[in-house]
Image 1 (cartoon, rainbow over the protein chains, first blue to last red):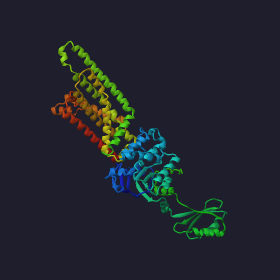
Image 2 (tube, rainbow over the protein chains, first blue to last red):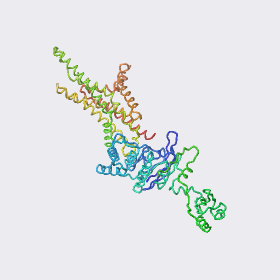
Image 3 (cartoon, helix red, strand yellow):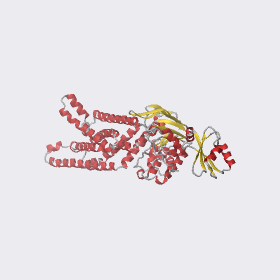
Image 4 (cartoon, each protein chain N blue to C red):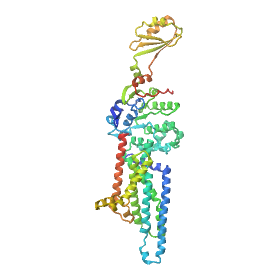
Length: 322
Length: 257
């Protein structure tokens, strides 16, 4: 549905993005992840026909964003990062303008406006002037204008920025509900958000795509060793556990998780599967196994590994609000 | 011209909802009322004197003593006020970022530019409509020549459209409305006083060129009730040129972000 091939954009001599290539299938929710200044907004501006790329092509539904600009724009709902709105209008009037500008026929306009108003939870403020609304409501109005007319592709530039935790949760569930019917492409520098809402992630850093995969896939790809956390009922000594399971092929390192000797972290080779063997031996020793759980690298760690390049300014990963 | 009506309606709405429009209308009507009163009062004073002097009475005529001065005075007021009407057209959209919406909606750039131009021109025509009662008063008092009045309005609207097209262009140059208004005011004044150059110019061709360029020079024949295609074409070319420049400027937003 979205196809970017070799997108490059220069601002003067400075390259904002270089050779960005990715594609998004129909009905997918794809996250576009990168630190501030990585080129997310530039890529999005090219996809939404706001600006042409210096080189490369962007296609939406098989139509070139530069050649068939007007047709492409008909297929896109776009929420820019700054959520620009005509603040002197009421919510309803603004949506009427959007519907008209997007060429929705007069008959279905009213229905369409009612639909997006209820979808975005704007019933209470539909008659109010946008300039008087809070940030959260403005964000919703912005989303409503993107959704109006049910465009097949929805592009959101940092949709949850500046919202309070409860609103973030709402916004995420709203985005998730769009999957299937719409193809959603959203940019963010907040990891939990992407991990929770997206089927796939495109990570961009310094204007170049550094990875494309599912959140799980990325984690797997970068995980050379697997880690297992073991919780026992009876405390055991380091030597005891080492002699019991250290000999199992695939076990690489056993480290105590705390001083009591009940909780242990075992690092294992990702290609082998020593877990059944470990469990069996511990049961035989009658140490009382309470828990055995594999610990995955979080997407955050993956992200850090991918983008940690000296000078890059890495944003403070925000706490998940959920 | 997809999306023309949507943007046109939005423009009108943004004028209705902005205090700038009401302030401009207020000032314009006060000044135009004053100009009308002063030329009419002067005319009636001269008429009294003429009642004792039949020769002078023959010279008097409503068109050249009331209608013509009134419309020439209005042209000066409009020169001052029209930059204030146009300053926000693009500058505000860029400042608030809403230009990003306009340029990513399925609206052609031509439609955006023309809709904005037609929107502000409609507002301008409304201001003109507000001076019509003065002309009605003339009808009540005397027998004015309505064809001359129509020519005056036609000329004034053409000239106003030229002012607005220039203002539209300067508004697209900057994000700051005051800069936009200053630039367009300066340029309009320049186009007005360029006719002064004709008295200094050394050769005939230069004199003619300066005279031709002057934006107010072309209004003069209209106020005499003269419809000359040369002057109509001047204004149309002027408008087309600045609309063209504005469209190029919008293209440059796209290239430079």
